[in-house]
Amino acid sequence: MHHMTLAEIARGLADKKFSSVELTQALLARIAQLDPQINSFISRTEDLALSQAKAADQRRANGESGALLGAPIAHKDLFCTQGIRTSCGSKMLDNFKAPYDATVVAKLAAAGAVTLGKTNMDEFAMGSANESSWYGAVKNPWNLEHVPGGSSGGSAAAVAARLLPAATATDTGGSIRQPAAFTNLTGLKPTYGRVSRWGMIAYASSLDQGGPLARTAEDCALMLQGMAGFDPNDSTSIDEPVPDYSVGLNASLQGLRIGVPKEYFSAGLDPRIAELIHNSIKELEKLGAVIKEISLPNMQHAIPAYYVIAPAEASSNLSRFDGVRFGYRCENPENLQDLYTRSRGEGFGSEVQRRIMVGAYALSAGYYDAYYLKAQKIRRLVKNDFMNAFNEVDIILGPTTPNPAWKLGAKSSDPVAAYLEDVYTITANLAGLPGLSMPAGFVDGLPVGVQLLAPYFQEGRLLNVAHQYQLNTDWHTRTPTGF
Image (cartoon, rainbow, N blue to C red):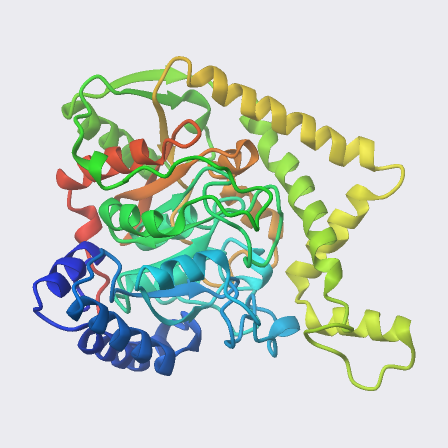
């Protein structure tokens, strides 16, 4: 059963080939057996999962139906789950049990999804390798000596290892799409505001967005259907109707205009990945798409702008973790200053401390205009580049990452080298656009992803293109050895 996609599970449950309880028990046993190899879970929720599975089976017996009713999933450990540890991968929140469910958690639970646990992640979602977690690094199922990507590496590794069919994730600068590329999955970052951030512990509020990780575009469509929608609790949530994402999956690609930015194919891109991207373009041309070269001239400024804006927002968001109200508190503080200093110094890891300090510096008197304000102006230029491009094309295609997954520890001593791996993904977050990564082949046995970007609220178009591509290729069906 563990090799079934979410769509196949939905059909199997509807046809009564197995029950949700049977499926849940099988996957919980598989997680207990195999997860020690990859460390993809922080918390397992066996009792909750079995109670939700029994309830789902009863709902089906009463005549209810639904693609997610009885389907097992997991949540990235920054979505608050009532009564369950929500750690954000940090010592700071190791003892925090959320008093409420995040909107995403509540919506998926209402749809009947079964929560198997909370997945590992870079601390406070800050990282591209899932090595900064206080609970230890996550390993890539395709090669246990390599990273799975971050910050949603736990969700990606769990789905790739067939421990479960799909999982929630978040994307601040590529944290859904990059792990999807590194682990041979399909990952979707929706338009900013399409999925509620209420109950999703913040890293950078103007960039964060929740989305799904799964093996196919069809499964991502089912997950997004359950996650998306307006939320009055979230002031950044967009009151825009949610279409049926599954309906448009089989639309023809005839005449679809695909833009390929010339800036994507620079010296920083591994030539073997470039070849796989060109192969993907040829496949889409066979399906009727029309390819056009375009330009995104301000892309070169995106990384420095992002790494000013995101740390600045993080320094503000993480100021609430002070050892006073909740979370980690140092022992025997001498005074209030000592309480703050030691609680934060002991509770936050080095990468989080680094970004807080960078952000606080960028926002400080005398530097705000020179750094933060200038970065926001660049952000607008990046958005304008995309708006101009979408006057000419329907979607934009390119590599998800410049290189395959690197070895564990290879970039630990050089944070900037890791930051540069986000070069193709962060522009979508700066502009608030939807983006998707889908499997496109392998380099040295490690998966490679191709990225698709679309205009605002055109997630359905991305899913349609990815689904048609997956009907004509088999990269997404490959399974890592041993899993």
